[in-house]
Length: 499
Image (cartoon, rainbow, N blue to C red; front, side, top):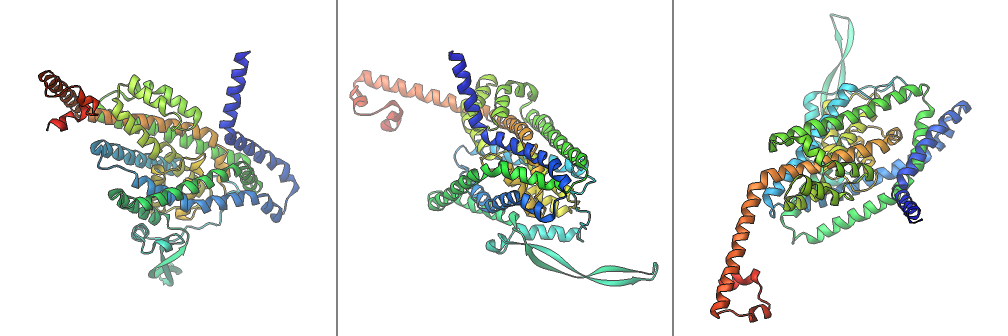
C-alpha cells in the first residue's frame, strides 16, 4: 500500500514539474491535428489571420521581453564575475566557457551552411525574396559600426546599414543595360541593434565588476530588472501551448506539401543532433585530451549518472548535487575546484543550447529563402555566442534566444512554431551536452590547478602544525593558558596574536 502511495505521489510530482512541457506537447498535437481538418474548408485570409492571432500575440510578447531580459542578464552576469578572487581558476574557467560556446556556435553554423536543412520546396517559403546587393567591405564596416553604437537609445530601435544608389549603364558588348553603384551612404533602418546593445551591456557590467562597492546600487537595480523580467517571462511562457498550436496551424495551412515540411524538420533535427554529437564527442573531448592528457570518453562515462539526470530533468541547476558527486568521487576532482567551477558553468554557459539557437535561427532564414551574407552570418553567430553565455534560466529560454538572433539580422520568426514541435527532444539532448561541458571544465581546471592546490594544502597543513606546536609549547611554559580559549582566542587567530 505504501508503495502504491509513493508511486502516486512521485507520479503527481513529475506531472507538476513537467506540466508546461506536457501542455506544450498537447499544443503541438492539436496544431497538427487542426491542419487536415481546416484545409478542406478553404478558409479566407481573414479567417487564417484570426486562427494565427494567439500565436502572433505570443510572439509579440516574446519580442517585447527580449531587450530587458537580454540587457539585465548580460549586465548582471558580467558584473558577477570575480576576477580578483581565485584569479587563476576564474581565468581558466571563463576562458573555457567563452571558447566552448564559440566553437559550439561555429559547429552549428557550418553544419547549417553545408546541410541546408531549411531548403524545402513548399509554399512555406517566400519565393519572391531577392537577396539585397552588398559588398564584402561594407558588410564588415556595418558590422563594426553596429558593434560600437554612437547612441545606445537609438540602438534599441534602429541599426545602421550601407545604402546604395544605382545608375543604369549601357554595355556596348552585350547591348544590355546594367545597374552599377553610383554612391554609398550609411543609413539607419528599423530593427534593434542587438549586437551594439550586447556589447554595451557587457562593457557596462565589466566596469561594475571592477568597482563592486561603488556600483552596488546599479547592480541591485539591474538584478531587480532581471528578476522582474524573468518573472514576467516565466508567467507569459504558460501561454506557450496555445501559441504553439496557433503558430503550427497557421504555418501549415498555406502549405500544399506537408511531406516537404516534415522532411525539412527531420533534416533540422538531424543537423542539431549531429552538431551536439560533434561538440560533445569531438570538440569537447579533443580539448579535454589536449589539456589533461586523459581519456575524455572514460571521464564522460564516469559522469554518466549526472548526464542522464540532466537529460531527464532538463536542467543542470537541479542536478548540481549529482554533478558534484560524479566529479569528486568518480573522477577525483578536488572539492575546491568542483565547488567553484561547476556552479560558475551552470550559471553562465550553455554551449549545447548555443548549437540549437544558431541552427534554429538559420533554419528560419533558409525556410524563407533568405540568402544570408557574410555579415549577417557573423552577426547571428556573435549574438548566439553571447546568448550561450547569458541564457536566462527559465523553461524554453532558447525560444527567446532564437527570436533575439533572428531580430539581429531581420529574419522573420513566425515559423518558430514548427521548431517548438521538436523542442521536447532537442531540449533533453542539449541539456545533456551542457552537463558534459560543465564536468569537462571542472576536470580541465583540476588538471591545471592540481600542483597549485596541493602546494597550498601542504603549506596550510604545515602552518597548522606549527601553530599547534607553538601553542602547546606556550601552554606548557605558562605563557599562555586555557584562559586564552575562554576569552575567545582561537588557534586560527593565534598566529596573528603572537606576531
